[in-house]
Image (cartoon, rainbow, N blue to C red; front, side, top):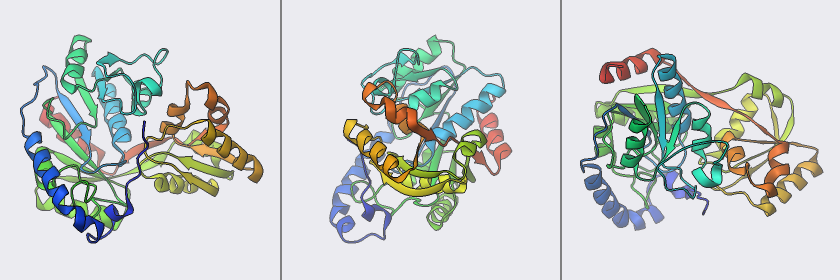
Length: 335
């Protein structure tokens, strides 16, 4: 699998390379907008979708997990549905963590499956049908907002506070998966994760379009934060925004001495492991990484030493107005 790294010009004021790619983005955006209008399979149970308007990480999986945990507390039999990006299995399949590793089911599925039954399916409609047949009462989708094959009952767009919508242009000129207006019209809420002027701008645009916006932040799990407090670490991550992870480590009390950033969904290899282990040993540093990165390493014998020696900072999503958000979902779905 190819690891992805978003080009820096996506996050700057449009011009230069973005301007050159604008015609391609306009064509891509027109096609994406039309595609999103196609009718999809209407499941017999409610479908909640957590997506984001841009490419790259924004906090979808922590948001999906937070929603799934709330539904479980409400006594609902919730199933997660994810594409399994980066995994070899096309699905639909019900994840079994004793049989399936990240190489088979992707980065997100192992994290979701630790919370509730999880289905991996590139065909989202087929995944929803399997959830129905397996006794699900509600489906929570991690990603797939722009995919029209499955009709959603309530969709939430998640935006990173630091990066927002970038230069506001559609791929490949910018990070947007489709023009904003049609995305806003298909969503019922937007969550801005973390602080930042870019997130404020995205929130203003959403409000102007009549889309309710909420604030959230990622909070470190106290137990994992305690293991890293005052530790001198070499932090590494292959996620959409590794810088956010490095800042979270510092906020948790770790002393970040060195950092190594890899592309999103990076599949670590023997060379990576040898390099990271050698650098940590040379500097007398502890290794620290994300849950997603650790999940990606598990099951690979060549990465066993790296995974065993890496401490993980686990995070959870905290909504500033959780009750308002949950009430909106409950009212919409009558859950």
